[in-house]
Amino acid sequence: ERRWKKISRVDCLLLLALANNNNNRYLTVTIEPLPPVVVGETVTLKCNFKTDGRLREIVWYRVTDGGTIKQKIFTYDAMFNTNYSHMEDYRRREDLVYQSTVRLPEVRISDNGPYECHVGIYDRATREKVVLASGNVFLTVMSPPNNISVVAENTPAPFSRYQAQNFTLVCTAKGGKPAPSVYFKRDGELIEVISYTQPSTGEQGSSAAGVRGARPLISRDLDDTKLQRSLSLLDPEGRAAHLYTESPQRVHTQGQQASEPSPATEVIPETVVSREFPRWVHSTDPLYYFSHTHIPQSDGSVVVQARLTWTLNPQLDNDALFSCEVKHPALSMPMQTEVTLAAPKGPKLLMSPSRAKVGDTVRITVQGFQNEVFPEPLFTWTRVGGRLLDGSTEREGKELILERVPAELNGSMYRCTAQNPLGSTDTHTRLIVFGTCA
Image (cartoon, rainbow, N blue to C red; front, side, top):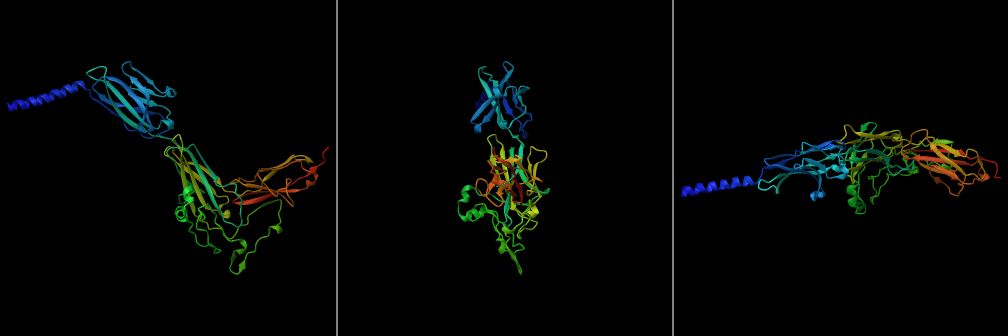
C-alpha cells in the first residue's frame, strides 16, 4: 500500500507538469551584442527567438531616460503579415528583414542608446492571451570630430622686449563622440608635456595651499644672467601670471652693466621690425604645460579644449611650426591643423581717398603683411610729433579714420605699430591734403 501511494504521488506530479506544458509555450529571446558603429553607417538589429508556439507580433523599442520611457519604433504583426514604423520623422528609415531583424540606415548620434525586442506568441489555452519575452542590446554610435582649430589665447597682445611672457595655444576639437585624444607637435615632433589641472573658479578663491596644489611649477634654475625665474604660471592669488624679470637697467653681467635704451633718441625709419631681445632668453628646451577640458554637448558629442603653455622665446619660437593632432576611434588617421608663429613684418597701408582734399574723411587701413602673421597682431595708430585729429594720443584697430581733415594736417606723418608677442613693426605714411573747400 505504501509503494502504491509513492508511485501515485510521482505520477501525479508528472501529470501536473504535462498540464502546465500544455498551457504554457516555450519562448526565449536573445540579441547578440553590437560593436560600435560610426555615424552614417547602416546597423542591423537582429532579434533571435525560439518558440514552439504561434507568433503573434515582434515589437522593437527605443529605451530613453534611463529606462523610464520605452518608445515603440517598429512592429511586425504576424496575424496580418504587415510591418510599420511608429516614428513619423523616421518613416522609411527602418526596414524589416526576415520578420525579426530591423535595419537602420545612416545612423545618427541620436540613435545611440539601448533597444529592446519584445516577442509575443499565442498562449495554448486561449487565443486572447499572449505570452511575451524580450531581449535588449545597446547601440553605441561614434562620431569623429568635424572641426578642429588652433588659436592663441589672450590675443591680440603687445610685444615686450624686457619682460618674459607666458604663451598659450588652444586647440579645440568639436563634434567627437566619444571624446577624442588631443596632442601637440612642434616642427613635426611630438612635444613632451607636463600635465596639470586648471583650477576652477572656486579653487581660485580658496587658500594659497589649495592653489599651490593645482598650479604647474616651472622647475628651471638660474639662466645666464643669474636671475631667478618665477616658479609658477599663477600668481599667489591664483590668477594667471607672466614670468617677470628685472628691468633692463638692473640686468648685468660680471664687470659690465647694461644701460636702459632711450626711446627719445631712437631713430625710426619708414618701417622697422623690432628684433632686440633681453638677456633672459631661455635655452632650446622649454617646459611645456598641458591641460584639457571636456564640454558635453546636447547631442551627446564632446567639445575638447587642449591648452599648451610655455614661456615664449621670440628668438627661438619665431617661424616655429606647431600642429594640433586629434585621434579618434572613428578616424582611420589623425586629424591635424597647424599654425606657424611669426612676428608681423611690413604691414601694407592703404589711404582712401588717395588724393585727399580739405574737408574729406580720410581712412588709413592695414591691407596685409609681407608674411603670414600668427597670432593676431595688435594695431596702434599715432601721429608723429603730435596728437591725433580727435585729440587722443593713440588709437587701436586695423583702420584710422580722420574726419573732415583741415589744411593744417597737410604733410603730417602717421605711424601704425603692428605687434604680437613675437615682435613688432612700425610703418609710416604721410598725409597730403590738396586744395581747399569750395
